[in-house]
Image (cartoon, rainbow, N blue to C red; front, side, top):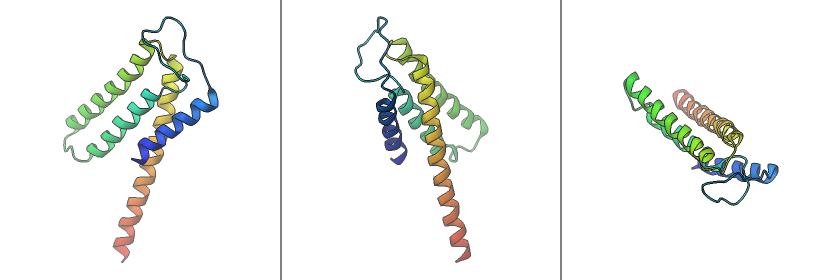
Length: 126
């Protein structure tokens, strides 16, 4: 929940800061609001990244884990590519979204693991 809300908040903050207009070259669909960063791309990376992190430890084989990563990666890339194809984002909007969302996901996973490890070590000492 925190991962998704943080991603949405970062997206809105960055759109407000940069205020980049959307491409105007014959889009296939009409979108309103600012272009940078791509909200759909941020949401895709956050969602599939979090799902991959949560499911990873429950898949016993390396082949299964590789399949999980490949499926997640394909879904994330497909979302970004579709936004550029539809003409509602520049490629840099998608790349920027991936970088911001990937960083946010890394930080939240790191904090989660840090707190989990601290709880485990505290229980062992008690």
